[in-house]
Image (cartoon, rainbow, N blue to C red; front, side):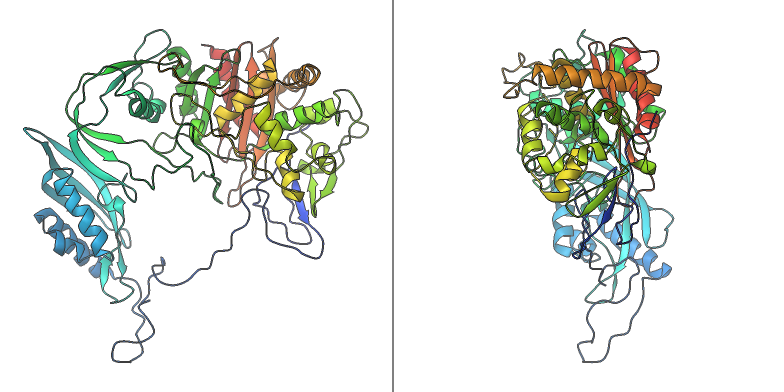
Length: 590
């Protein structure tokens, strides 16, 4: 069994090891540019002012025309003194004095005034902890009030002392997270009767779903409340909550919106849209009930499996209906990667690419198909992991071994928009029109040309997916028909689910399904799927990311009427990292 995917080589012309693609790539030709197969290299101009190294950056000369002295970063004594002045003024409610100790007095004044007038936080006690260089942790103890209701509120935050660019004075570097660690630009803390009543989310059999029991559902429950809170028949509570601003609720991140996301160079998505978040309940409201498609049994199993792993995310759904049965992330503190992540899916995306080649007659399951060590297209040289090749192979053997060059070799026969059309018209991806009942990212397959188009064939280039998308497209491969994944039945609110313009052609679908079954029994997915037959299919994948020592590991598979997909950030090969996770979730059933 051949390993899946491939890696970058350094190459004589300087192709970078961190570029996003499974194929090794060497840039060739006269015009060599620094462009990765993912979002692309970005040139960062590193300048002074506000750098971690400190240093006076307030201009070359003083007001008197004398050369400025480089003072360096704030000393330990300056950090301690500045922190004390800022925290003391804040705790006394002296907003002007506290703001004056920051490098953005206007923003600080607005935020600290809102802290008192919108969040109604009083009796504020701020206790600094032990500084670590210029960073100082501190604890907050306050009382949150609204009308006649009040409760104590405690949390921890952190500030950083820098040297002001204009005055050289040590000041607190202002950012919203100083007020509360989960605040972003434009967000505010507010205590009042919440705009949306609380909800009681239940699974497909009526069992209650809570974030305490199922930590991965925290963001899902927030999203459900935001969408259905005022429709489920409940009464609002009095809460202290984070109300998200426009910069946090980016266009394209909420249900049904157009998507224009790009991943950053770390491999983490910059898709960070979040719902309003309750921090403290001052008085409980009356929750309304929202029925979901989640299976408590499957959710518990998925939660237990991701808890054993670092940076793992998984989705389980029913191919016959699109119902989402489980959503789990080992990291529950931020973005829900399983539903909202935006990452290069690596060779799992060859499911979509293969369907296109089969429909166009550019491949046949047992027809001869090249899998050389190298394939050049658009000025890039692609290669397979460890430079493997399959001599006199077929498309079956190439697909099962996840041969990159078998796909790259067909790029010259394709139009720039062929892959985008296939993804949208057959698999329902990348149109931003899914109505899942919660906020999701629906995939991205942009029209690209030359080497980037070729890289997209193997799940790199500009292609972006998450486990929900990947589980959906293997489900479509199994059934031949796209069924939009959803967590809340459209019968609840009368919304219309997204559809694809056409089904996968029967001949191509039969061959694709056989390819996936063969891969799960005799190819790169066989080790993970051992013992789960007979009705199984699977595909491995890995996607290298600049700055990571290991690629992100992907795996997707079906077993009967269950389909699952998972990613492990920096997990390495998908078969050995995410493969056992998907197999365990499928084996656990619903």
